[in-house]
Image (cartoon, rainbow, N blue to C red; front, side, top):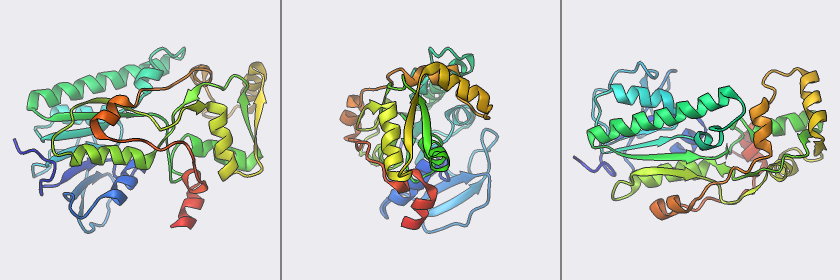
Length: 296
């Protein structure tokens, strides 16, 4: 089987329109194989980029044999599609999530189901790759941020910019390792560019572990100046959430994890790919889409 690292047939990519996909596209080099990206919406082709219309999991096999297949979106849909496809690329690089660990013992049944679905998708994809001789590199990022497009830290900033405070329970001291989307894209590209495939499952944390409330404070300092973290007793915080009746209000699983450390060993990833993620020093452009647009 052709190695696939520098094959001119191209890399078939799912999720190129997402945050990590945007970073990956910007980081591609002229000597990389061209990208063939799948999207539900039409896009204009560009230099070394061709778009295919379609969506998972119903997408038919493409009319070519890609050198590598890359999944930057939901793992369950990709794993289901790949298991049914007939493709046998030399390399498959896919993003999972450390939620497979963090939510496995959540008090919230829905979150436990998410962790179980991620674990099942990992197993299904690994089995399909093994059966076809495709080397699977599975990367599990922690809390991804960057370019104001994430759905976690940017939402906290948007709330604080509007209300000038960010309420958090006093126990929100669990450790986090936020990882920049550029570093996630960099890990994907390192796996694709490596002279030899890099099979394995790797947690992909950021370069610094810090308490949740300190992470929030740093975000506000650069992207919501003047706003502050308002630490509340747990019962008061819960009451405020209940009275607000906000859609998407944090459930028991989220509140429990605010108190829990979620840290992962970067050593195996560093040994395999030589990647050292940056410490958490966010900029306004990392946490606000408007600021990111002004920077461009």
